[in-house]
Image (tube, rainbow, N blue to C red):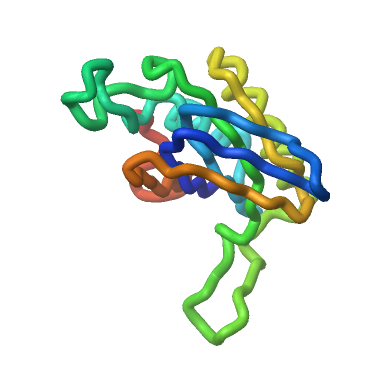
Length: 156
């Protein structure tokens, strides 16, 4: 599982002119499910997403001091299979590492549920839709998380 996390002042997703998800202060997470991801990847991602210190201290003096819960923020989860693209060879991206849509939807939905179980206000985009995502990046602060990287499965 791959996620791009952006600390935001606000973010929203619109599909066919309708607002489907919106948060104020928090994290916009663009998430791709890989073909070999499992429930372990879902749990790792939920735990890491909820515990990574992306926010300033309450007094604004210390950077990377608070996680999203401590900062009283929300999470907007948006499925984005293109993060699993292989782009090293040629000009056309290959998506063979991305999970098939039925698997991607199942594990993405499990990620949403896992984040919600951690008592974090959560909104989502619309799976497999042509989404228009807008945000006001705060910082900017952007991190890339990969559940299968050498750092996984540790959550520290």
